[in-house]
Image 1 (tube, rainbow, N blue to C red):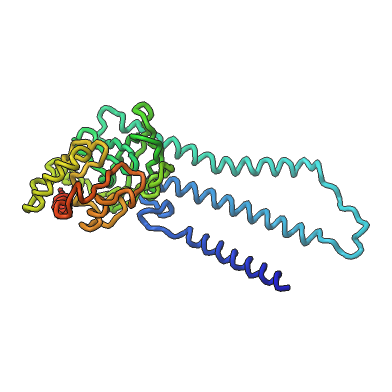
Image 2 (cartoon, rainbow, N blue to C red; image 1 turned 45 degrees about the vertical axis):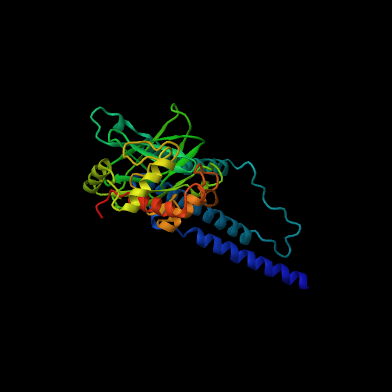
Length: 351
């Protein structure tokens, strides 16, 4: 008896857990949710999800209705023990009906799916001779993102600026393993493959200014879940101003301590990182606008203490990345303070 009670309690507990899991699955941040689309591509995918769910619900309700009707209509009654029900196998009308209905449902789902697939894969606008669209070469690394604006001599990392109301085409590749570029609120995902001959192209477009989070959607190593980036959508005027500021660069250090940090950076960091807008960082991200970012390594709050902790223990924070660890023998605490002040002062924004 006690065992039966325990079984019921366990079933209730599992049911409540499942219900909570389903409810929590609907939670999410507005700037990181495919269920709150802010871009053309994400809206298409959202529409397909709605169509699929409506079809599934309709099929479920019809099956339940038929099941309930049969259960009630043909339930076993007293005196029916010797009656053999009418056999209906080989009913041509029913066979045609349950063959045609699934075909119709598949067509309802397939037509918009194929249509959207061709629309999202259309890059003819970028390839036109008179195209004035911005094109960004996106290279995925373990575990950070590099963004190089074609024809602009501007390279950034972790933060991708785009103008609202315009298509920005992104060429996707990888410096190591397969990654996947995904900004859920704006666009679907597409793989970043290693090699120059295997570049995928997709576009980002949104009319809403804001900051949208991007994720790597392909398992790529121990810090795959920490490989975040931001897409910052601003007005075309703000975007042009940002491009101009990036080309000018952050300027000279404003304090003596920051100037000392610049020297330390040149000695210990410049072989991997660049602080000029058009330069590719090499094995590490470009840090031209590092002081304007909101995150360190894409995940930590942007402040001096976290920056120094990152330089001292990068493998503990983001396992498997290529950032070397700098001990006190290599960079003293005093030099580390100066280096942090220099890096946090690398700003190009007017604010």
